[in-house]
Image (cartoon, rainbow, N blue to C red; front, top):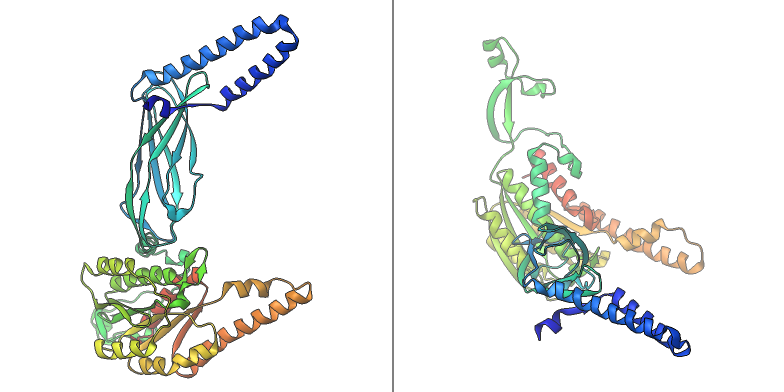
Length: 443
């Protein structure tokens, strides 16, 4: 019974069968070729049977397996490898059909593979998940063509795998590696000139070109007979909290990823940068009520705690309660800290409704409000208007874009720092602002 479930025929077989039927019809009118057609058809069927027997003669002629990371990175390209080993005594043409998790909504993961005798072929493909959560991979199906390309045998390897999709740790590692190689400018991170000195003196060292002449230590210079300067380092152990809005305004999609997931990915990267700058990193999530809170610490396990916390964040599509956020921050965070609030405001009135609570937060902490440009309106503004309808749409888009700029000005008037950023540049802009605050000694 399993043989019949695994036996298929190729298009070549069906084309040959259709040709035989057509020739038998012709033979009805030309009886002289009927005998030749019967012999030819018999040979054709025999070839198909032999082709199938060759495939089923070997019990396990193919072995296939899947290899990937234990966790997938949300919003990033993740490599997946399929290993297909040919155990037949001849070369093969194969079709590998991968059963992907339903979240990808793809049914066309089909790969054509050729493998010589005893050869293992590796198929690599990339997956970009756009939702956090658990992904279930199905079986690997391998359809093997016989030597005559008439029959096929299906192998099904039930390698059901369950893989969690976490916030983009691949993006986090990219910034980490670039920081180690002093090449952060490749990702758009700016080198910010140090303004003034922090309170932490590090050492006295020889003067090099570019050092601030005001930092020359004249007593040490006189003793060493060469220019010596006081070297200061950024003040450490400052608290950096990422406040992530999980309300309905953060469910707007951009490039298949929600604004909430962009904020979560940026919070992970920024927390890693802060920890490497010897600051303490913490997380607070909220919507109509406070979701999760992780106190700011600098332990070796802190980044893993942040990753696990961000992985489990979901929205309930509620209106966000900024008053509750303010009460929580005032009661839980006693030390002056940098608060990066990831949220979104579409209208000036919407921002003004929350302004009293933002002003109170900014009174006790260094507050940075991060919200998003509407990229669809930007596309409309860049596109020339050719008719009355397009002029109307462009006017409405300009109104929305103007309101976004007005929100930035309104925040600035009340001493609140803000970033208006496209979603795809969120991480870079947030890190740049953090480094700017560090260089200016604001935290």
